[in-house]
Structures are given as structure tokens and as C-alpha cells.
Length: 267
Image 1: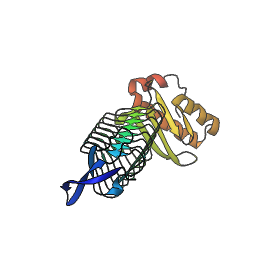
Image 2 (image 1 turned 45 degrees about the horizontal axis):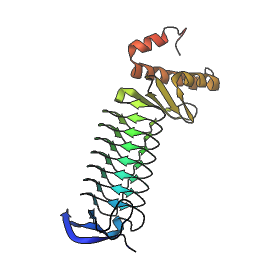
Image 3 (image 1 turned 180 degrees about the horizontal axis):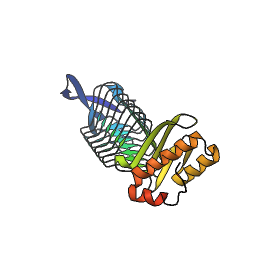
Image 4 (image 1 turned 120 degrees about the horizontal axis):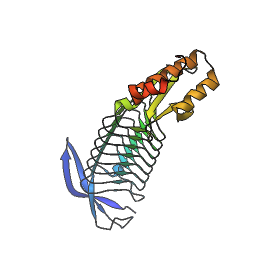
């Protein structure tokens, strides 16, 4: 049995007709006879589950809303985008391209998720934030304000990326990260024995956390791990130079000078 139908009411946008939907049965918090938002065709909204499009929200192209997902307000889902699970897309948010929003993720405000980006878990993208390219935002992470996450970047864990921050490339901002501007993180690579990327970022305690391969810990723990693994070889020197650069950029000159007062010799 179908849970909704397309009504005769429609709007036309860019040469496409989008039809308002009407619930045929009660499901979830939707009552039989309730009018919803707009879809271009039935494939845009699953006839199974509790997924719904409400308000003036629009789903078009080959985009699909399924599971228990909800698209509301003036939100737009288009292209080949997918919104599923218990995800919520609301406000004036836009999800487009081949982007996926799933799990318990939320996209709200004027946020944009596009390209091949993925927002999942309990992640929340809001405000004027953009997540694009092959970027991944997941876990309990939040991206908000005017922040941008793009390229192959990952934001996860309990990380917060906000303000005018731009997280891009192969950066991995995770754990208890607090990045509110470009000076709050440093991506450097390819360095080390594996010629990979290392990300340094400000944490909630206003210190520095390091993500390098499987390692995630404070910058002091990172230096200790480097010494334990590489002694004083070329790779150790490069990692420690990178750590020096991160302290100078993220903590500033005054803190950097204090941290280096007791160093007996430079790396």
C-alpha cells in the first residue's frame, strides 16, 4: 500500500514540475490526508518507512529520501543525493550532487552538502557551513558558522569546526578538536617513514592534538612516540620540525618561545 500520492498542485522550477505530496495513511508523526512538500516523482521519496518531505521542502532529480529521514522547511535535495536513516535536512539547507546524509545526521540553516560528501553518525552541519568534494563529517562532529570542509578532509569524533575555518586536502580533524580559524590547524605532508600526512589541531583544552596514521594524541605524546619509534633519525627530525611549526602557528610566538626555553639544542 502506498503511503502518499502526488497531488495536482505543482510548482515549476528550471523547467521541472514538482508536485505537492499528500499522505494516504498515517505513519510516524504524519496523519492521513496531511499535505507535504514537493517531489518531482515518486522515486524521490520512498513509499516504505517513515520518511517524509514537509513544508515547502523540495526533492528533485534522482535524489532519494528514505528510511525515517525527514526533509523540511525550505530545504532542497537534488541531483543524485541521498538522505536516509534518521537524518534530518531542514531550514534552507541544500544537499546536492552525489552527497549522502544518513544515520542520525542533521543538516540545517543555510548549510550546503555537495559533491561526493558524506555526513553521517550524529554529525551536524549548520549555519552557513559547506561540506563538499569527498569530505567526510561523522561521529559527533559539528561543522557550523561559515566553516568549509572540502577535498578529502575528515572531521569526526567530538570535533568542532566553525567560524571561518577551512579544512581541506587530506586533513583529519578528530577527537576533541576545536578549529575556529585557519590558524587553528596545520596539515603537513608527505613526511615520515610512510610519506603520509600529519594533522595538528587545537583541542578543547587550547592545546594541540595530533592525528598521524593510527596515532591520535597530544603533541607531547606525539613527540614521545616519535622518539620511541625513530630515535633521532631523519624521520624523527622532520616530525619534530613539523611539531615546532604547529606550536608556532597554533599557539603563537609567546607560547612557542616558552615551550622551547628548556630545549638544550634544536632539532
